[in-house]
Length: 273
Image (cartoon, rainbow, N blue to C red; front, side, top):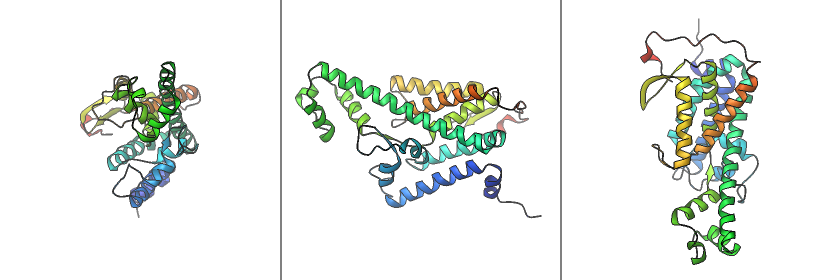
């Protein structure tokens, strides 16, 4: 008997996950071919598909969807796709392809909307503050265009505040992390005693403890600016994806089929996700 290859088995058992993985890998390969020396900077595919701030020219509505299929570097896409493959495949087999795909896309869209909403609010607070202190519109526009604040603007904002103000306006967000956080929340709701173990944290932890902990860490990082993984992480999108995932799980709670308790492994060290 001829056995199916792993990729063939994936397309058969979890077609949505297979298409998501293939789309992300193909777009990342295309992005690298377009600009191999600048995988995350000034790449034309990023300009088109990453999620930009609504007030700038590169913003388009489709980016709320397309950003979740784009990634910055090999580590970024490898980590996210491993999570989608590991947890998403299980959810698709439990729910079916249609429900899983709806969940994945809604969680990713929600993450993008929440991320954008927070940025618009923070940008607005800067504008309001500067307006109250009689900083002219011309000074603000000049700074956003040239990155060089004049004396009028520098007298009202610190260097860090100026960097934040500029970064909000010109920053972009990309990656499947928001959708992945939704998947992790769904896994924790369905299989609260399932064990999760990360490479940098080689201790198996039950999902009902692990998932709230990583969401809490993202919230802490967003509020304090401190992150052990460095800068450039859209913590708001992570939190948004987790929140939308939780809301969907609560909304679907009565319609979800009863699922047997996640089996405890005989050798916990073999359970790696």
